[in-house]
Length: 144
Image (cartoon, rainbow, N blue to C red; front, side, top):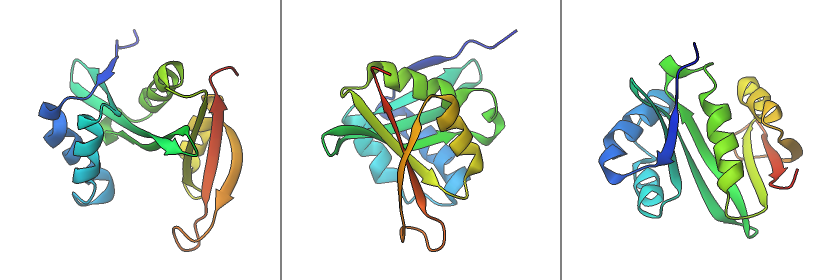
């Protein structure tokens, strides 16, 4: 039986949980201010299960006046359970702009598959963000 997951706007009481989850991935709290700002500006979605927060998504709308998903984090113990896919699907449905972009490193094959399964198309790449690991840009339209 598939577990029910709920997606909602993050609230400031969840900052510590989100930052701890992010630290598990990047090894430090360097994105704490970004996470706090996104929560305060209502640009952070969390996905919860009966066990707590499974993952979160942060977006902006200042990427050439389009939505840009700047961060998707899934708790390591919740990976490969559809968390990132459902966060993406939810965001596409509620995005404040018709065009939605995101990106991942060329080395992140798992996230590339997630984008492709969610109907995102490759839209180009950017070199020199991470040495030797280009950033692949993905695109989806709400009308696709």
